[in-house]
Image (cartoon, rainbow, N blue to C red):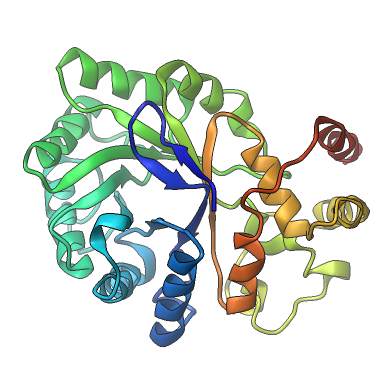
Length: 313
């Protein structure tokens, strides 16, 4: 496993990260989830990304149960707050009240004394960013949180948040969590340039386009046990156009002696602004495949070949 420094901080994170959305404590049962966490840790993963809202808190609870058998000093626990967790007007948002109460809830479910990386899950237009940054800084000073991050912030929002924190001698964001993959390159236009300027690292989610870039949906078929097989699940990437692009990429993966998933992950990690990619897994063999993507490199000529395919989409 390769490790990278997260932004300008001294925090070294594994370039492959295990995420808990839909998997840990969700569609994957507790026993299997814990086994996957142990498998990831044994494979060098040190960053585990969950959120209070994932499976209504179950993702955090299951990760917390797994942590009891792991050396806490070798694990980076990342969680998030923002979305609704309880009824009423205080049950969601980025007010100081909601952030502080959400953090307490996450600490209880995780069974830890502190959260290594605490992230706001998305911007909240109804709360002044000054209040949000002050609340997060309070948690840092209380020792309940070590580092701060944000998710789904655009470049302008990220710059504003960190400027406010630094002007008040507070704690800025060291990480950003945008959606980024071969089929969705929006962060290259705004988020990545801002992060490069601010010294903020990116932990990107959906690097495999919710499974589409693994090639398992060839011909539009939906395998049993896949995300698309779950009732009500929607995938923005499950389109004829995107599936056709994946099939054009398939020969390149074979040529490079990689699986489609490994090639897609390495393509994301080619960017200096990207510190890590978040992967999910429901079975040991899936996780084994994605962990093997660490340390592989794509040559400039290979990236150019991939770009040619993408431009034809």
